[in-house]
Image 1 (cartoon, rainbow, N blue to C red):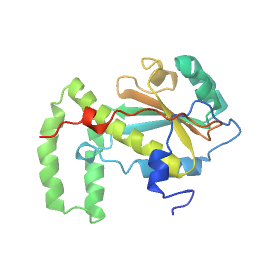
Image 2 (cartoon, helix red, strand yellow):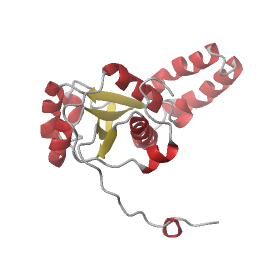
Image 3 (cartoon, rainbow, N blue to C red):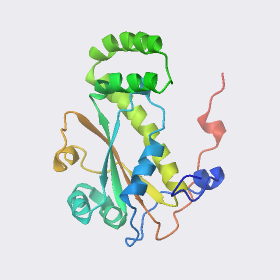
Image 4 (cartoon, one colour):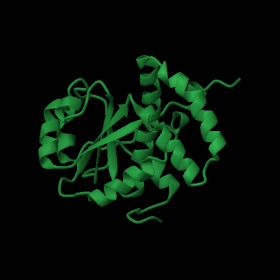
Length: 212
């Protein structure tokens, strides 16, 4: 296992995950370990590998106090958690295309001709993409990284809760981010559960699936 990880048990990670309502406020996550959690989560797939997710990690008491009034009915979770990760999407994510593809060539992951072909194909598409289409891409990709982040956190021995109920129109500016560029996606509280989460009923596959 990697440093900080506590389990590689797939069943424990997936089936043991719960949306936690109360956290032990005495438990802190070091920034070194949080960096590793985010690094592991960021192996999630994304559209043409643009990795449009951006993380704001709110782990100080000052930061959590600033976030609490914006978190509606989730204030207690925000204040108790070791940290809150605000997931954003970068509307200008294609600005990093040259770096991402260039580094892939440098590391031997991709030949130069493939990089040139793909960037020449994607640049015209992304230069003309509408804001709504970009938002759709970002929300899909940010959802993938957020789910992976919750599972990675579980492998490190922590619990999480995804939050959609907060003041999305205010959070970027409250933390000094450009609200036109950074699209708020969700908040994720992370920490050590103070009580077990509840099991929840899942619809059977035959009600959610159509075969063709």
